[in-house]
Length: 208
Image 1: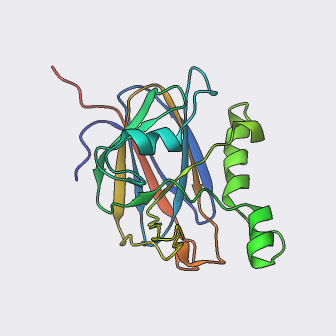
Image 2: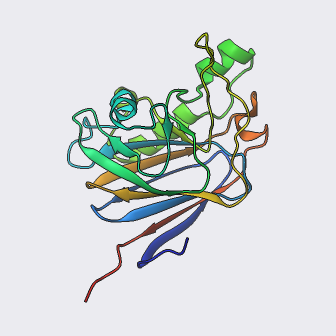
């Protein structure tokens, strides 16, 4: 889908990298899975009060899609501030229950030493905005499909995204968006091969 508006940022986030930006109400952003099968961990906050952050549970309860986020899903904060709306989605089935990887989780699950991880990526970006570990929250995993089995088991299988798949988000408030381009190499969420993504931010089209 063509972008309609003035592009103000077009950035490639490297494999295992991180990114953040404040978007004004009405601005939009596109996250592109350039090579496919790349999980993108995502958090967002009300710019005017960072304590008013993304609420996974309420977002799942309020939206008709339940645990899967897709076109039409509104991302709500803990105080039910609409933060973003997903306005376009070429992939579908984005996850909001699996959370992010961390050094401690990798050590426990995979018996490995320190590896780059999403928690540390998030903290790197949050520090730029005066935040820290207490400001972490359960996150979204774009391009990651995590179905729940009949006995409650979670399938952390490979992503279903194809090269060039994207999701478009429209800011419904003044919002801080934070991305960890997932570095995980111990399970198939990135097809064992983290790759770059693209982030585009644009102003809404002007009407004259």
